[in-house]
Length: 369
DNA sequence: ACTATAATAT
DNA sequence: AATATTATAG
Image 1: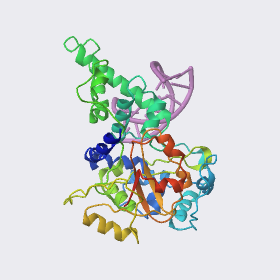
Image 2: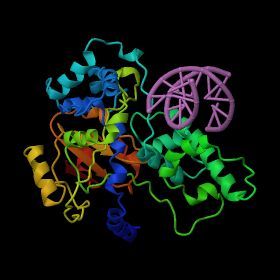
Image 3: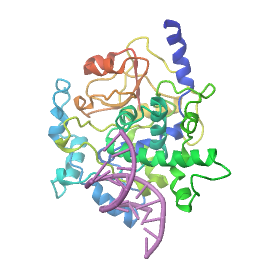
Image 4: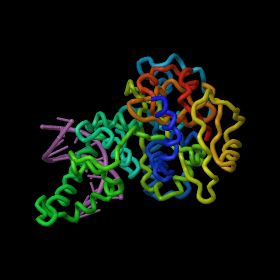
C-alpha cells in the first residue's frame, strides 16, 4: 500500500473540485455569528431580507456551550476569548432582547445545489442499499445537518430517481406515469447534480466510474478570509435566500458542535498557477503575523501559505466520512485556518486525537486564509 | 427507516 | 392564491 499512497496524493490534488462547486456550500455553514463577528453587513437589503435578518439575529450561542458543552470531549480550550469581537458579537446579537433560545425552532434547511451535490456524493459512495439517512448524514458531515433533514431530502430524491427510471426504462410506453409540470419544476435541484450511473441502473457496474473515497476536501485554490468570503457571497444573489441557519446553539444538543464553515471563493480573474500542495512531510511551519496581510500576499502570490497554528486559532475542519471533529474544544480567538485532512487515514482514529495531537498530525495541512 | 401529510416559503 | 420545498407525524 505504500506505493499506492505515494501516488495517491498528487492525484488527490488534481481531482479537487472546482471552487464553484464548493463555494456555495459555505452558505449553509457560515453562521450569522461568524458574519457578525467579522462585522459583515448586508450591502443591499430588501424588506424581506430585513425580516429574515431579524430572525437571524437572535443567535444565542450560550457561553457554556463553548466550553464544556458536550459530555466531555477535549480537556479545556486554552484560549480564553476575553470578550473580544467574537464573543461580543455573538452574545450581543444573541441577547438582543430575548433569551428563550431553546424555544426557537431551527430554520428550515435550504438544499442548495452544492449541498445536494454532497448528498449525492455521499449516497454514491455508500451505495444505494447502505444509503440511509443516518449514514448519509454522517458521511456528509455537515454541521447542523440532521438526520431528519437528510431523510426528507432522501425521500424526495428517491421519488425523483424512480421517475427517472420509469422514463428511461418504459420510455415509449411511459408506464410509470406522465411527467407532470409539477415534477419538472420540482426537479430542478436534482437536475443540478449528475445522477450516478448505478442509481438508475442498479446491478450494472459502470465503466471506470467508481466512487472512491468521499473527497469532500476543500480546495486550496483560492481562499479568503471569512469576512471576505461572506461579503462576496452576500453580493451574490444568494443573499436572497440567505436563510439563516442556526445550528447547534444553546446547550440543547449535548453533541452539538461548534459551527464551522467551509470557506472558499474563487478569484474573479487572474488566477495564479496552482501551487502544488505540500503534503505531509512534517509539521507545518512558517509564521503568520496577521491574517489580513497574509491574505493579500497569499492571494497575490498564488496561493496559500503554510502556517503554524496555535491553539488560539479558529479551526475550520473540513473532513469527510464519519469524522466529526471535536470543535467544541476549539475556541475562536485569533486567526482562521482551514485544515485539510487527507482521507486515507482512519477517521475514527483521527477523531480520537487530542487537539494538540491534531494540529501536529502529519496528515493535516493548515492553510491560513 | 419509510411514507404520507402538514407546515412554510416563494 | 398556487405550488414548490422542507418538516414532522404516523
